[in-house]
Length: 459
Picture 1 (cartoon, one colour):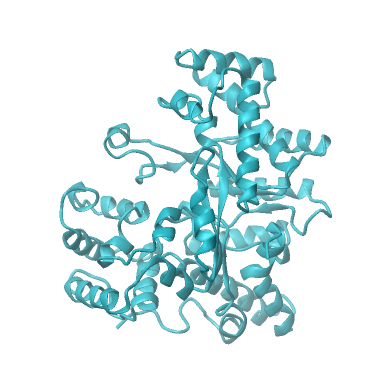
Picture 2 (cartoon, helix red, strand yellow; picture 1 turned 30 degrees about the vertical axis):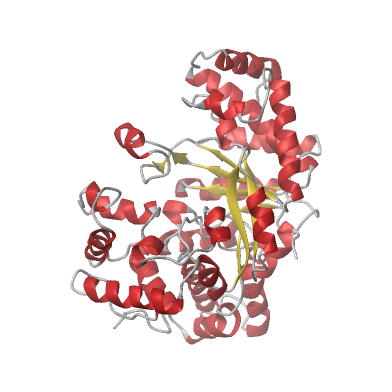
């Protein structure tokens, strides 16, 4: 039987009451993920548990590589069943890893299977889950609705086809799928395919034409419901003059390569431009910093982007982030901003910085985003809550997200909710805060759902 019991991660009675009476049944607002919208639209039944569980999930791939599993059993030519069994064998001894918890919770929640995941049980789990999939005609829609999800913000590049979202809206699902605007492929001027991506926007020869094209596409996104945008950077770079950025852009459009310094000049200016644009249209900005991407060039050329070869960067760009926020604020052009930080050493620096730019425009206008990517584990979430409460205001926090490509990732929200309730329950039983369970329960509900609804301004 599964080791995950009803009181999993809940270490006292107050924590249990907070979770079961206030957190557990709250809907899920997933304001940042990488689910494929076309798959949601098509809504085709899955063929087997591998398709749902392992295909495209580089979190799981990375764990398997750490265990020495050959790439043939991860992204290679081995059968779905062989890959699934290799993952089960890997997970059986991955004690303490969040996937050790998440996968067991996913198995129980979505398939009603309580077998412990390990090499010995792999065959039984494969058969039991596949039988469930066929019997219940499991589709993306069913998995999302089963998880009580009301809103999904997918992550879409500036040139993506938006008709998919119009078609999804016609389906009458019990949840909304909305694209978050992302201009990373227009930002990353050093990329080999950069000019190819810019060409997707039409006739763009100058930086001003690029700016116009970006604004046009943002307005197209807004027509289908967009209220959030993503900006992903290893570090925040100094704001450059437009003339300097123009020179770099012109050089790259001629097909010439750019230096690291020139790339930073361009990114510094374009980040500033994008933030001003998002403020103009009232679009909340999700700034992701601290990821050092594509470390393994051999695997990058073999498998492409987002396949599990990124890591935590050590860049400290707190001063340039401060100058960016200050300049935007001085120009009345600082949008609602969520800062996602991947380096835990920077928690307090970022938390205290965003506190300098709050306003009555929104409760928690400047957000310190939840523990993200390599930090969305028990240790990372607990540290996030400690830093958030020490130097910020937990009552304004907009809660968890999945940041996932898997339709089975929603138990991560409950993982976070259990940790949140355990954290607050411990403080309550320790006499460090109010014992008013109704008051604290309302804050828990706000963090789980209502704060995000109000922050993004959706119904």
